Amino acid sequence: MSSSLKIAQCCISLKGSSRRSLFKENADRFLPSFEFFDAVSVEDLRQGFSIENVRVDVTDLRWTDHERHDPRRQNGPLMFTEIACAYSHIQCWRRGRERGLDYLVVFEDDAVPCRTFESITIPTDADVVYITDRMPRNGKGEAAGYGCGLQGYIVSRRGIAKCLRIFETLYMPIDLQILAHQRSQIAFGHGLTAYRKPLAQEDYLTAYVTPVPYCVDPGRVASQIS
Image (cartoon, rainbow, N blue to C red; front, side, top):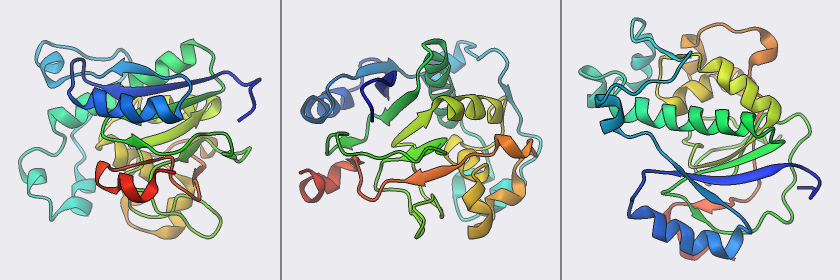
C-alpha cells in the first residue's frame, strides 16, 4: 500500500483480554503501527449500551434456515455475543470514517499476524479485502464461499460507507450479513443472499481475498509465519 495513503491498523479486543498479549507479540513483528480498539462487551449490552442509528431486527428469521444445524439458533437467533461483536466492528468503522482513512486494517484478537504488508496489492475496486486464511476465494480472487473473514480484513473508505449503510439494521450475525451483501456471493449461491434486505445496487460490496494470508488461527502459526 502506498505510503501516501491514510491507513490505520487496529485489533478489536475486549479491554483486559488475555488474548491481547499473543496478538501484540506477533503484531510487533509484522505491523509497524497498530492500536487496540476496545470491543463492546455483553455486560455493556446488559447495561443498556446501543449504537445510535443502528436498529436490531429479529422479526425475520428466515436466514436461520441456513444455520438450522446449529442448536444455538433454536432459542437465540441473534445472541448477545453476536450483537456485541457487530457493534464493535461498526464502532471501529465509524472511527475510521471520522479519521478520514483511505484504508482501515481490522483484526480480531484471535488472529495471529503472520507477514508484513509491504507487497500487498489491493484491487482498485475493492471495498473489502480479506487477509485471513478463513475465507475461500475463486479464480478471480473474489470472496466466493462460506467463510469467517472478519478475523482479518481491509476495508476501504468506500467500503466503510457501504458497510455502515448495510448495518443500519442488524439482523444476522455480522459475518453472515457481510457475506450476504457481497456481489460475488450471488454466483456462488450458498443461500445467504436470499435473506438479505434489498439495497441500491451500488451499495453491495466488492470483496476479494489475498492469495496468501496475512493472519492465521493460532493453531496454524508455525506453517504460515514467514
